[in-house]
Length: 139
Image (tube, rainbow, N blue to C red):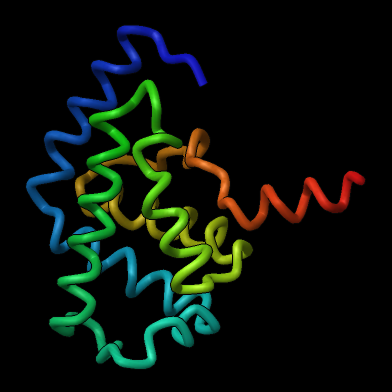
């Protein structure tokens, strides 16, 4: 994905506004994810999943921080999120289907909280497991 200087400026400006509300945006993103895709709750058996819980606020802030890392590395988003992707794929064993699921309502919730319209999740790094599956299927 190649961005113009103007697009980069817009993204960084939006991120400055979004990042000040990291806890609220992250919490809302997870609440929307769990409401829209209840099957994703199975990955959080140890969390209190009630709206506004401490678990959702803490993990939501981590999600937004990871997005911040991607914004800071806008020319290498995949590289910036490689360790996080590998953690979710190989250690936490999250089904790759859920990465597309999470990008939708999560990103939209965050941008709505910050008073912005929807933002595309294009450019997110591919999940290592999904890449591996496509490679096997092609052979």
